[in-house]
Image 1: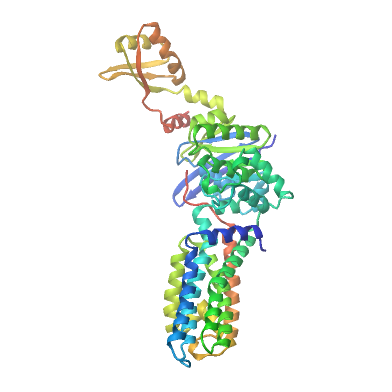
Image 2: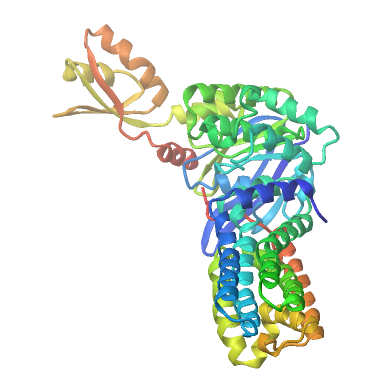
Length: 239
Length: 304
């Protein structure tokens, strides 16, 4: 289910692109913000959950996952190089699982790990840091599956992903309780809150609900992506 | 000998637009050219044969197996797509070796070396593909498509963007592969390319198969079609009289800009006009076919 050759090419393609530096920007912002707040605010002020939870799970995690998840396969589909990969006997499920694994791992490195580092920098937040790290890891996996699927389904995966993150997760999920059951950010917060309960995280789902829904969405997205890739067609040329 | 590629009543449409209309063809070992003007449906046919497009109707097989939703078909099929998109950050050798690994070949190193040698890319194999010329990119794509020694090789407009020397090299390579018993199918909209390389051709016009079979017979049909030429000479009136005496000349019109000659046989007229002018001591200044577009050639084939 995992193809090292596909993974190697994907890693080089993803990290070699000019936009690769974009991955690191939200992470650097979070760590710098944490350092500034640690210095400027007196010990005891409860800003950790707001910064690490709100910024980390509403901006850092989804945007990093969006750029990486839609790029690992979507960029190759856009520029046509995917044909070289798909004109081989490698099973489409293997391609999707490998792309998903690379996307999840890179998102973990560029989003979950900075979340842990920022959590350890922030004062009095040792257990919270571990909880947020676990939540971000779960989010990295679920987002990777969803955004890889989106890149196979449509050529406008980044635009649709942005709408999902900004409108659905950023607005509707905070205003309408029912919208949270389709919010990856809330699955991640649910996992974090289940490990270290903190009301200021604003988690709207329980740990069990988050894990079950997260697993269903991940598996469903991967199955749909593999089925769609099996019917991959070259488009736009009628000559 | 059984045909490697079989299409039976294959059609492909996009909404209301019919790109390929009820094509039946068999393609066996050797080099076959898929010839037609831009928009004729050549790429659509190649995409369907290579498993990257589902036929809307009909049956299509390579070595007896359907190619759509069947990645196993790539064990016997190699594809060189038209789009110049490769993993440019890899070296040529890394690209071919990666393809060999994806095919899970038993001896990746030997297969990679052989494919690169066959395409004469050894000297540049350690350079990044981003530094390659168009012709070198085409050759490394051919090397990757050949690394698993496929019986069938499909190439979509392989000579596009190549300089004359690169074209000759690619033609020699494809001719050699065809002579070895592989089934090579390439598309082109340039008659001369197909003429130099292919022994059999499939001519497509507006999504339909206009002609199919031995190239020489079809070429004769093409060159014997009626045609209009614009001619200027040192003495147009005498040249008109000399030309009209020959059976391949249907009509001659004397105009202010020279002669408009309607010939019944394109090839015979081109071959005879210079000797006729010389016999009468006339100097030819300009000879220009007025309608030399491929569309007109192919249109004639359809009507016949």
